[in-house]
Length: 115
Image (cartoon, rainbow, N blue to C red):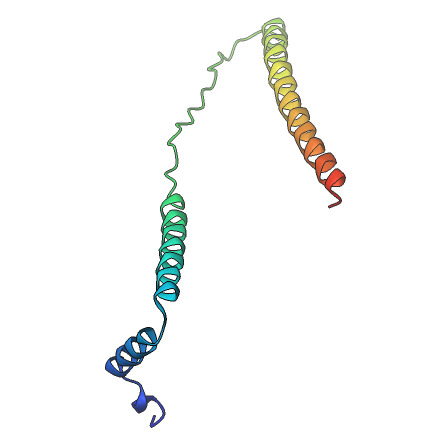
């Protein structure tokens, strides 16, 4: 603990003032400019890191079926649902293909750069 007894905030401030008094004017100007730029970058990253999530309600609906449905009604409903399901699957595959194409373009551009 005797090692830490030599540390004092007042000594640190006095030492910093002595160090800065020995610097030339242009060195101090560049020091404060670099300090300001660094502070601005860190503050920008801090402010940008706060992202609020958009609240999106997910409502799931279900069909209420009567117990006395016929097989023909069931098959008809499945045919309607199949069309809707095929549309959703096609839309998802289109999104996936578009995303793959974007990654392919990125990969090709990185290959051209030699990465």
